[in-house]
Length: 415
Image 1 (cartoon, rainbow, N blue to C red):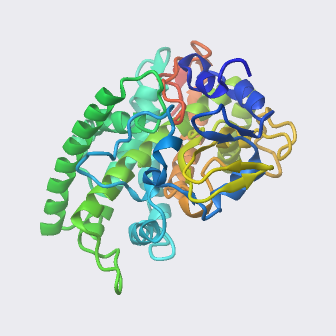
Image 2: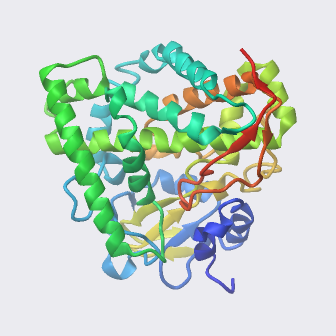
């Protein structure tokens, strides 16, 4: 490979279609350019490593000489908030994730997500009703962004009037996940610290309000200490702040991309759009195929080897940075027949789009339900939708890959 393929993957010019680059990357299953991360691109290797306790999600375990020169600023370094549990290892990870899950889903709150279905359906309906001129629609601005951000704010108990403030905060923090070799890392770290401080101060005030006047939202339950039992006790204030910040950002950034990538894919496959319009139940397998075909998270770049690890005869030294390129694994022809074909009728869709192992996507049940409701209702109500431009403009972020806008024109909005 004459030019480092990882830098080509990070190049914003590759964002509309990185999949040929992933196919090229798979020719070297354990790719290493002499410095920087080891990139793993095949399905079974990625799946195995996602379950390997010798792999850490805490970048503080990297050795200085093995650090990833492609990585941007670490948003946790020198900031007021500690790392969220996605960036921690057991036992701290397990404790915080278990406590967070109690008010969120099964087994302790088994009906929490499904009970939100009527409210989600109302939000979807109202957003589509408010689209306005059907000939000039930006689905990101008018639907894909406001839907999940409204949902996560209501779930956590963020006042409706404060929802717009999270747009800038979330975009800034999400950008920290993107390795950006050409960015000013010092300036990026400064912006990240400022953003996390602003968010932390806001959440601290909100948590104090919830302690004085609790509601039925997740933040109230966590602030009241309902997540802890026995020796675990409640979360510390700093743990609660970092967890709330994590849920706010992760709770909608990926879902925005899932819905937007989903509509883009459907508009490129009008026969599937027609099938979905006639059969809304198709949304269930369709979303799973989307998570394989166009995953909102393209690769995991925060993994570190805690010991020497051998993959396909290559030894990855202790302290090395790893990239697990899940979007490549999802198109691995050794795992999926005809992997570059979008097929919601595929019999086997055991994708990596939501991760696997102890760090599998915390909000997967909510993301699935949101995408199913959003895509089936958009398919039903947008009359003869067409793309205005293809490919659409994309965000720079290579990890959280999705269109910055998705302009569509329709003949009308059906009731």
